[in-house]
Length: 227
Image 1 (spheres, helix red, strand yellow):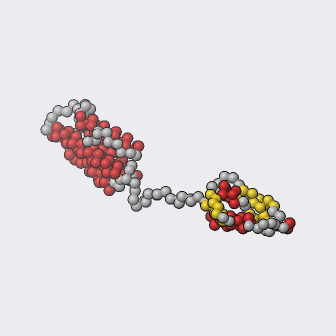
Image 2 (cartoon, helix red, strand yellow; image 1 turned 30 degrees about the vertical axis):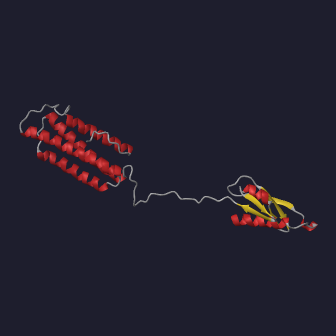
Image 3 (cartoon, rainbow, N blue to C red; image 1 turned 135 degrees about the horizontal axis):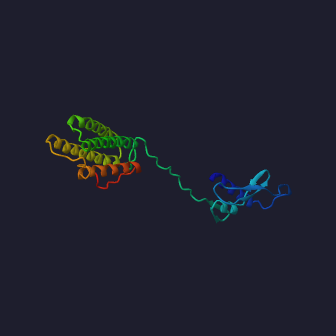
């Protein structure tokens, strides 16, 4: 486009140097010139089978500048800024913010297993059922396996931070189970509502809610309940 515009300007300069045109060379308007991306238009004049445009109009249309030196006219076109393509994150280098999809899925599995473990423990205490190590082993094994799978899925900073909170939640659940198991083995009395107001049990519940809220929002936010 730049070369075409400059060529048009040079043709006009050549025209200006011709003192007079014969009748057979009379100029007639034949269409308009428009520059892509620029408002306005310029009339085209056809002479001897060729199209011409006034250099002043061309300069205005292209936001260019004219300079004169003797019989020479120079048309300077504005420099166009090079286009820079937007950076696209590489699939092999995932973003370090937010949760990865694989970790969200694995983390939900960990939370679900701990929730089932806690519900079974509370139900046993409320109904006076025996709590044995064999009874708790299945929940502990499943939760530990799911936590290992979550560790493999860690790929972002948010994943790593949330994984530590999941680990804390599992440790607290194990601690609560051990307390109930020790009480039953030592024949210590536990009422059916013993865990309702237990601080450790409440902390596990609050942490579980915090982790669920993070999974729903997709953003890591530590409110301190899982520490």
